[in-house]
Structure formats: C-alpha cells, structure tokens
Image 1 (tube, one colour):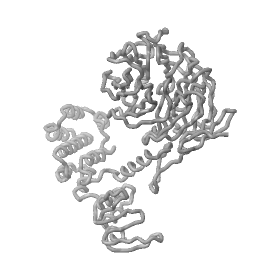
Image 2 (cartoon, rainbow, N blue to C red):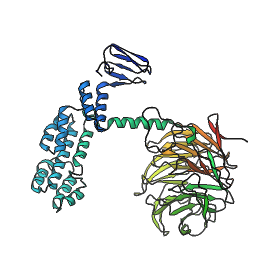
Image 3 (cartoon, rainbow, N blue to C red):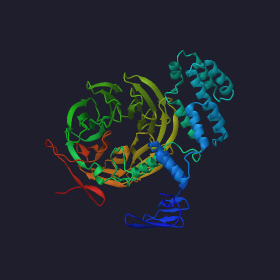
Image 4 (cartoon, one colour):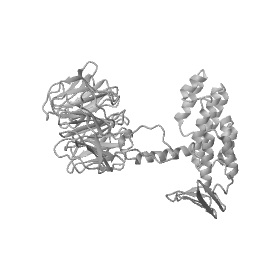
Length: 580
C-alpha cells in the first residue's frame, strides 16, 4: 500500500466492504465522520492527531511486540523515524557502556540545563558502580573524585558512594548500593531515567501507545454504570459496557439467628466470614464461604458487652475482631479461642464518664487500637495488653474516627461536623479536610484513604469528599434518615459503587462517579442500619436491619436448604422487587 492509498494525501476512490470511500485533495471522508487532511487524522471529537506522532507510536509498538521488520518498513514508507540518529547512538552507547560516547551525545539530547546536569550525574554514578563491580577500585575512585564529588548536590550521597569501596565482593557492594548490576538491568534502568528527563517530542516515552490505551479503557470502565467485575483484559474492537445483571440484586440468604435489631455487619478481609452486631448485645461470626451457592452457618457467638455493640472491625489477618458500643467501651476478641483479649475500660462506666470510648479503630500496624473520647478530647493508642502507648491531646471532642492503613492517617469527626486529619506516627494534626453544614451521622474512608463518604441528615443524603483537596465530589440522594444512624460504604469492583441502608427498609446503590441511583432493593422489614460489600467478591454484599436479620446478596439466584430467596427486576431504571 503506498502513501496515497493509506489516506495521507492524493486523490483516489476505493471500495471497502461494499462502501465507497472518496478522498479529495488530501482529505478522506468516512461514514463515521473521521477525516484525514494535510497529514492529520481528526477524531470524532474534533481533535487533530499528527501523522508523525501516530506513526512513531505505531513503530514503537510494533517493535515492542517483535515486528521489527514491519516497523522498519513503516518508517521507510512514511519517511518518519521513531528516533533521530543521535538518539539511536545515545541508546546504543548506554547499552554498550560507552560512557564517553554517552557524555559527548548528552548536549544534543534537547535537555534543559538542570536536566542535563542531572543526566550527567546519573551517567557518572553508573560508570562508578560498574567500575567497582569489575573490581577496578582505583578507576572508580578517580571517577568519584573528578566527576561526581565536585558537583553532586548531595554530600550524603557522595559519602554513601565512597563507602561502597570497602565491600570485599561485588555482590556485597550491589546489595549495599541497592543497585541491580549490569546483568541485573542497571543500564536499562538508567536509560529509562534518561528518557523521563527528555522532551516527549524528542524521545517517545516508553510504551506510550499502551499508556494511551490504558487511559481509554480506564475511562470506559469508570463511565460504565454497571461495571462490577475484575477483568484482566478488555477488547479494543468496541467500547466496554456491562449489563444491569452485574449488580448484586438477589437476596440469597436471610440469616435470622439474632434476637433483636442488627446494628452492624462486616465482611472479613478474606471474604469468607461475616461478623454481625446486635441490640441483643451479642456478636455472631458467620461462615459464608466465597462460593455464592454455599449456605452460611453460625460459627460461634461472642458475649460480653453490657451495652449493644454497634461497631465491628476485623484485624488485617482476620484473627482478631474489634467491637464497640460507641458510647463507653471497646473489646478485642481472639477469634481462635473466642475469648476477650482486651476490654477498655476494664469496668463498665456511664456514657458521660471521662474515660468512656466514643470511637475506635485498628492502628495501621495491626498491633494496636486507637480510640477517641467525646468528653476528654483525646485520642489514645493502646497495645493489646491494655496499656496506653500514646495519648494525643486534641482541641475538640471525638464523635467518630477512621484509620487509613495505606496512608497511616487518622481521620476524626468532631462535634462541629468537621473532619480533621492526623498522622499516626507523629500524632500531629495535618489539616482540617472537611466541614459539613448538615449533621454527620457516620462516615467511612475509601481503601486508598483519599475519599471520605459522609452520611448526613436534614436533609438525608450521602456526600463524597476528596480529603486531598477538601472539595465535595459527589452528592447521593434517595435514602430516608431522620432518627437513626444509617451507615454508607464503598463497594463493588474498584469501589465503583456507593451503597447505603435506609429507614424505609431498603438498600440503595449508586454509581460512584456519576452519582446516578442504580438500584433500590426492598428486602427488609425495618431500618437497614449497615451494608458492607465483600472485599474479594464484587458481586456480594450483606445488609443488617432492625428486623433482626442479616441478608446476603449476590447477582446469582439459588434455592438451598430452605433459605428464602428474593429476586428483583428493573422498573423505571431502578431495581425493585417482583410481586406475586
């Protein structure tokens, strides 16, 4: 195919799949509205794509998948090279370890003065380390003295490099330097560092087409209202979309072992167990398995709270469980022995007592518990022996708190409906992230710790805040909440959904990004207090209600061992129960 036939210019007319394609004066008009004109491809949104950039991306990708001859043919046919000759020579110089050649070519690599200095230093360090690896200590020290020490910005780095000469073996030196060595790919790593310093128009970033594809696919997934699967691959031949059936809308099992209202439900981190806390002052551990058709069973019950527990949290290894009544105390349970390891305070106190615990959570290290006090205005770090490790004095009361294990942060809700962020290690306040005008009844954090989901009353709604920017991201409406604490949470694949209970006995599911209400599931006969999604299976969640039941939901329907099963269908864009 010559250049004109490829659509880059010339006057021609061809028939493809029975459709006539007319090209006139360098432009090509297609049925999908795209055009090629003056060496530019115009997208449906009106963006111009430069021919030379597109060809370079294609050549790079063809080489990456092993089609080097085809890539060379494309370069010859289009007259566009992936890289200039000086870039090719520079690349070969690094690959061959020809450091004089690399330094000579650096000024022609279109680098700023600052980036050029950094690039030179990277080359000198690689040369120094390779000389040490080859046992050429004298030459290495000469490189350090002449080329690195006079201009390196970090004296600590110079001292570190100097200390490497004392190691008796190359292996010991590489480990001390945290350096891969030539055979381990150090030159490839250097080349990648160099490439990041260069202008993208001069050197195409590594796997650039793959990056663009990833961005496009991620965008499609984020815009897919019903996406709820962990896919390892997506087709490039058509846009991604999921059906409504990906949302869990079937109540598989109704678990009714509690004798009173269920106030909190939580999946274990492995997704094979569920803990439920009830007004009957007990905690039940259920085995739910990871297979949708496996019938749940009661593993055991935990007794010991003098007041109804309303908060639960599994330790990172699922061996311990933290429970709290959110007014006076918390307990840590050993799930292997079913014994209470820790109770704080050790004796029962009235809710207004100075030592009463208002909120608690696992410390990021998984070995301590963090608690907050409404009266004393303190945060306390406890070890599992019941000793206070740290006491943080605050300027405000603590109504609730959450811990981001990924960021090592404690987010505290005060009586003024504001969220404040503290560093777990330094125990210092970082910033005030959010201030709500409506009463906040509960909140939770996203897995990455960046977003907070706040349940507010008057009017009832759920609000998504970005803790990094302090901005309100999304507002979710529909739930009923005026008298009770109703907990919302993130759920689904990549936390694509927001889910919440409601005082109208229903479960509400929204698309996190768009804010669209996707499903209303009426399966309870009392206020739905808590909903939690499985951390391993995006197509399962559980709900707990004032009707005394825990309900396990999935997208699949089964009938087994006498459990009741409820199916739902879509009406007016929402999921509602079938009648009859």
